[in-house]
Image 1 (cartoon, rainbow, N blue to C red):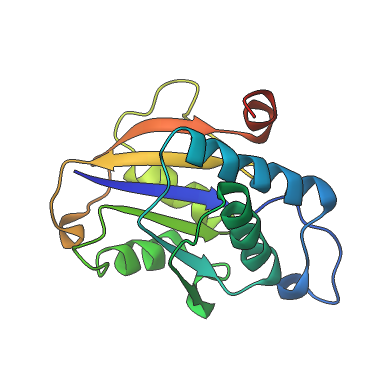
Image 2: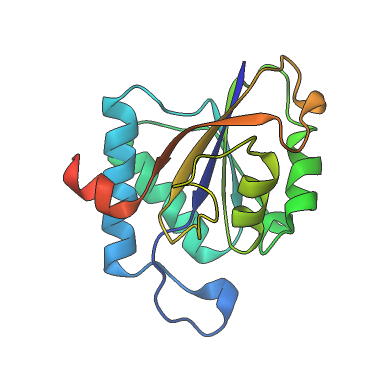
Length: 168
């Protein structure tokens, strides 16, 4: 089984342009707490693919700091505002040694790929807006990322910032 973690960056502040927007204090704290939660529950990903925007890089750093772990990462310019179809093609090229991968990116592509890949999401997850700091974990009954298809994943968990604040 392969697992895909989809993380929307934390709440952003103001920057000179969209790509340079840093995390707001609440965004930094939420993602830090998420890192703590993932470590406490032993759910850290094997590898992270992260957009090259400032707020996603800062989200990665906060996640890693909160988890008190060194997490392998590749920063990718093509994940900045990437369409769902582009993310799907990227995932299909992931190294097969990676069992649990995380993408840290942006809406609307992140929300769309969640809906595209999820097979029969529950009523509470159908139409999920993917607010900042939201993490969705999807499981796939595949052994090779190239076999990833739309409507083939099972939503294992969705974690939103208010839940993170309560559980850390």
